[in-house]
Image (tube, rainbow, N blue to C red; front, side, top):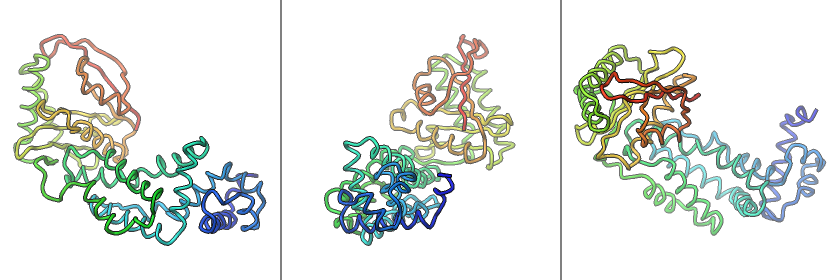
Length: 350
C-alpha cells in the first residue's frame, strides 16, 4: 500500500513544491515538516512515509530543482561538458532556492547521520557520474592529458562550488565559472603526452616495450616477446571496435604505455591484456587512468566479467587491480618464460 502511494506523482510534486517554496521563504532550518504538510494539503504521516527525514525530503526537493538530465552532457569534449554543466547549474542557483537547500543539507550533515546519508546518496555518490563521465570520455578520446586525474578534478569542482554556496551564493558568477574551469582543466594546447589508437609501428613498439621491460623485471627473454607480438597481432587482425580496445600513450611518437581489451577470445569474459607503463613514466597516474578506461570500455561494450593474468610480485600493478575490484581466482606455477614464476588469474564482475 505504501509503495502505491509513493508512486502518486502529483501528490509528491505538491509536497516537493511546498518544501521548495518554504525553503525559499524561511531557509532550510526554518522549514518544518508540519509547515510543508499544511502548505501541500497533505498529512505529516504521508510525508514521513515517503521521506523518513526532513533531509531526505530536502535532498529530493533539490534534485527536483536541479534535475540530473538538465546537467548531463553526452559528448567527449570535457571543456564543453563543464561549460554546459556549470551554466545550467549556476542559472538554476540564481533563480531558485536550490543553494539555500544545499547549504542547509551540508550544514546539517555535519552533525546528523541521516542528513549525511541523504547528502551522500542523492547528491554525492548518486550524481558524481554526471561530472566524471564526460571527463573520462574526454580522457579516452585524447582531449585531456593521459595523466589527468578525473577524481581529483571532480573533488576540486565540487569543493569550490559548495564553498561559494555556503559562504556567498551571489559570487557564483560567470567570471567565477570561467576561472574555475580554467583552474580545473589544462590548456587546450596539445599535451606532450597523447592517447592514441593503433598507428603504424605501434605493434612493434608495444612488443619491444614489454620485451625489454619484463627482461629487466623478471628475466623473461625471447619466448615472452614473441608471445606478446603474436597475440597482439592476432587481436589487431580480427579487431572489432565494438568489443575490442587497443590504446597506447605516446610521448611524441614513442609508446610509453599500453593496454588492450580482448572481447572476442572468450565469450564469457573480456580479457585485459598488454597493460604496461614504462618505468620512466610511473607515478603520474597513467596506469590508473588506462585501467579505468579499459574497465569502462568493457562494461559499456556489454561484457559481464573481466579477467586478466598477472604475476606474483608485480606489486604496483597488483595494487591497481585490487583497487579496481579484481579478485584472485587461482595461481599456477610456470617456467614457460624461462625463470619460474607464479602466474595469477584475477577476475571482476562488470
